[in-house]
Length: 304
Image (tube, rainbow, N blue to C red; front, side, top):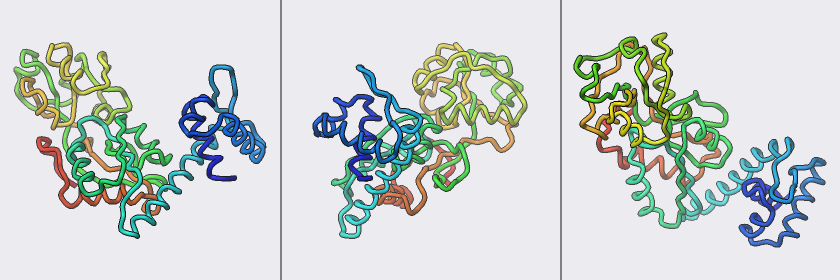
């Protein structure tokens, strides 16, 4: 099995099309097809279901994809490690992040990183914490800034960045705003809730807080970006439970502390592969953050 066979396989799996994959790899379509056939012969299993419009992975193909991505990521890390020993940091930094993460100003951090390491290509992807954890574990991302969703494992380790309580946001004319006091989950039972997709960190933290308090709730208005959430609350269409630093993004809204949730807090972490699989670029970025890289200027979250 040759590395180019794995590279060709991953490209076809990503594009779901032989012609597009061949164009991206700058190889002939016949050569790409031959490479895939050679891999299938060696593994004694079909890897794709081919149709006139697209190709999809077989069960064997899905099993191979995770391992192939991990192997190729390790090869890239090996090349970059050798370059780093020679005094040059180059290659690619693939970073994932949730929106408006606490404890780090992502744009400022990446700008500082680029000034120090101009030969490293930066790639950025936004997604929910669950998806980001899968991407790092599979080797598709070098690291990610996310909400803690699980303990460290043999495929993932974490570096704590910040921790903060959850806060209730509502319109100033809402009945909760007039109380002007800290709330417990039972106080907002039955309210119309605005929240993120279940994969997002703030939604997971809120679900954990209400579960800890034994209070059920239903999310009526579900969004995938911070500004839409704030707009809906600003129009008095519902209330939101969010990390405390969100209150700075729309000062006109009323922010009330949420108590009575046990140990449930919003903890921001950097997710990385095990030490041996961490790329030099990822180590450099974390090192920059730990030595005073840009933090979110308004969050007020407690650093860890």
